[in-house]
Image 1: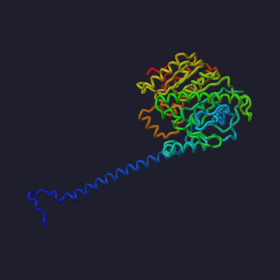
Image 2: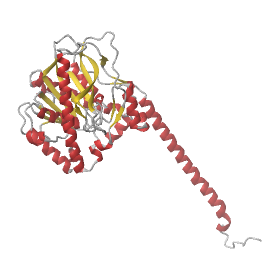
Image 3: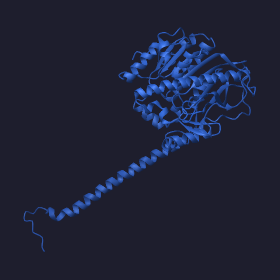
Image 4: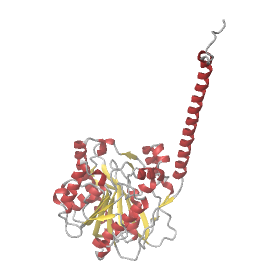
Length: 429
């Protein structure tokens, strides 16, 4: 059958449409294929970069004091108390203690692992492949500045003791930079992790204990979270008192002899980050053995808000200027005011502009710097990681120097000069 002629002389669309549609469809498919290929190549390049970064070693900031630093660990079990957070009754409370201290110049002492292999393995299983293998550096490649189990430095007969408490589910070792720096200035720094509190815990028999979701206030609505926080804070404070009791026993009669008489517990301080900072506040409120304390970006809770403190205290806050419309932030600032306004001489409140909640820990160096850079671009804290740690270490050891070693207060008063990011005094955002 012949086609009907087109007497107008114009192309007959009915004759050309099938070929035109086919060519258009081919072009569209090629375009999508190219875009898909570019996306795959882009993702491959991204993951290749993250994998390379994950497998690249990194050195923590060097301690600024003149002492070499040693690190040792203990497992201590509280035979007198059961753990209320354990899923079955009768479980005794246990802690893993990490101790950094001024050491004799090491000869054959081996470097301390940043985080021991069983803990790295347990964390990897808990965190998942994406976070553990691509968004976090290989923790076995983090180079600290501690050696494993050397003798205590003979330079002084004893050294002041400072308790360190990490926040939420964080590891004590996430604060290795702060601990090593403080030890290098002549302090024995004692941090600890505990099952059902720390995100994952490895016992002395290598049993792995994950923190149940029910023990994380962030998983609960406000009223339930407040009840859990108050319960947790009492337990964390009790844990701290137990650790100090054990340190007294260690100082009186260390079975190895290494620490006998070397811990000056008459000059005891405490500092903590986030919920560890809240614990520092409450412990210093409850236990007169605490002579000075520091809260690093931790909201206060419990009776210390109503009663305040008698000891010198330093508050270090990240930049919360963008959160003032939040009623919860207003309440936290009011609680800070309640404590700060009634503190004796020796109080100090500083805010670090551009800092975020993690600017005080090694996590700013552990995590992918590509991820950190993206967050900084999105204004989630503009402060570079090493700069935040430098400011924090300087304030922490100087504050304890003044209040545990009786160095002149002028050394603390002069600190803001090299740090324009620091604002002293109660924040007025």
